[in-house]
Length: 431
Image (cartoon, rainbow, N blue to C red; front, side, top):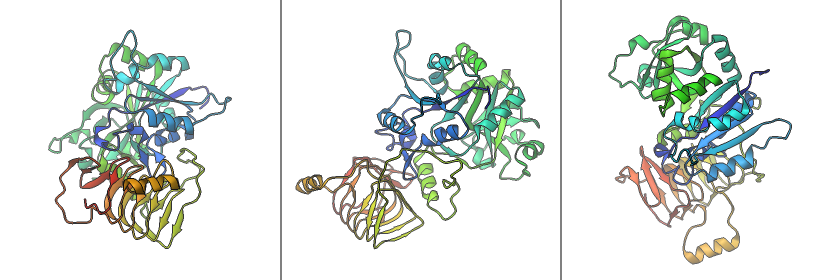
């Protein structure tokens, strides 16, 4: 990247209520993903692969798990000047508030960023799946002469609902912005021009790519962003800061044509994970040139004994015996006992193996071991870390009335059963 210095700021989000109960005991960026990763590995890997190795992560809720993951994963040598640093919300003599929004979180940490004397700030989200070359986006930003560049993805009209819609001219300069238009709102004057579509991603206009939606990925010229945040007290980038900057400054769109998806809800999280196990997933993790990094656990290979497994991913360190598994993801250190049947299940695995002494103690207490018990059948579910599911359980298989909500050891959201972290599901349970 030459003499241009860019630092990345990953927004860790608030309480992560849309991903609850997965965020009950951890921050959103620390949620396990794709069997062996954490959500935060996605933006960090994109930064590293783009040559950006000075990365801040802003968070304020349940950050212990995130701290452990970052400390054990992203260790740069002393000659690279690289780092991944977590900045948790802090109270000072001048301020005793928590982060009030995304822009407020960045504003409250400007003093930390100033030490790096960066030319550009790259603002990223901690709950998205994509692979992007930020160096190319940065060059586009510089060439445009804009104060701010927003990464944008083409969407259909139904897909525009719930996203920030960009109105740009033929050269990609943004003229207007509509935050989350309702389905019945007429936004035809926001349609992307065919000239911009051809120029940016060499595509023809169709009903599938009529509009440009903000991806929540921004590049700011550093000094100007600092000035904006110091003079504009608004708390949120998407709802307040960005529309204001578009009205008063030159703002460019960077049209992205690769895979991108927000992982902000239980349904989106579940669907994306299960799709990764399909024959041709929408997102490809199998790329050695631009890998997704994560913690090296030094675990043995997964052991599979007398199983029928198809369209599934099995992470390292698991032991699976005489089981039927389809359309599922098996996380690290998952133990699945004989006769178990899983279809459309994401098992996040375990943080440790239980010793024989611990298993004997479990038997005395009449609680299952960590993992999935004998002859247990599970359909369309997420099993969080260290869950204990007993023998002969039936989860998501029977025609039962299931009300959406959060219960003692499990939750139901969008007809997906989520077994909580460290939950104990007794033998013979039917959910």
